[in-house]
Length: 387
Image 1 (cartoon, one colour):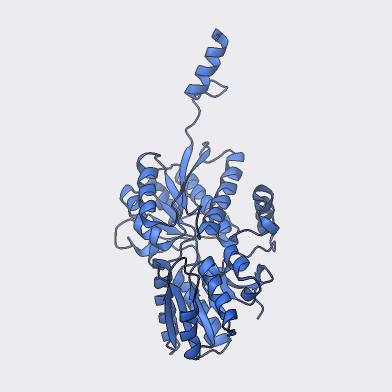
Image 2 (cartoon, helix red, strand yellow; image 1 turned 60 degrees about the vertical axis):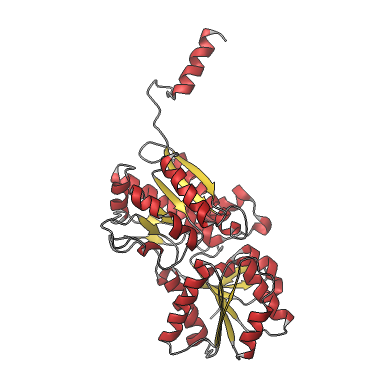
């Protein structure tokens, strides 16, 4: 190797810019979610939305003159894996923040490490109501969220089923995870507020492929609708199970009924299913059109449909919220970023909504009921539900 080549290699290794100054260290942000398994449509869509946002920010010069570097980890929707990843991202990768968490159980098991390290974690998909309250009794809370929590969704589900559509006999089918059982509790509270008790409350496990027993109990109890809390593959088994029993009542459930692996596995049996949505893949604003076009161009999803549009949009917005806080703080220091998130000065136009003071010291929820609408499955896609 000649002297000139050795010099070029040395410059590259040391990270000098063309001007001779030391290149700024990248800003490391963790991305944690299930990129394999039944929850993967949510995890992959979230990750891809995050990557789009980071690429856009980097193309405009980054944050504080530094590029964002994403550090991705697949938590496989397993609590123990989430715990390992949190410690690795904090202690080894030295991330300044992490976005993600699809599964409520993984979030509750893992985010304590960020709280202890004073590093913000942005839940951009997980919806368990307790998530942002886990450390609310501590002087500083490092857990934020920009997805619609289950207290919002359960109230909307019950309002749709009981008030708008007049059903008095409702059944609840929820999976056995933290997500399913906490959601079931929220549904029961929302029903109680209307003076109604579910005629059947049934549980099932992840990977169950036969819901006959649960559905027969709901049918025997005279249920006029089935309210659900679970994820796509098992929710499809509920829809398909109704068809096998020749018993078709409306399914109304949490936002996960919009997952691609529910829509595809349920086929025609999923038509008419309704669920709360923060984002529907509809280019009804210039910002949403640009986002959808960029996503489809970059990832080429089958039939042009995002596997989980809600997850993609919220993932995208979560990076911009963190970037805005870092810019305002003039730092990536955890306590300073947390304080900036709690008092963001500038309005931020996101894909889900325009964020105007989305957080405060006592409220770490960016999404409220005004940001959520009902979607309906129609011939392989989710569209805005008709009145």
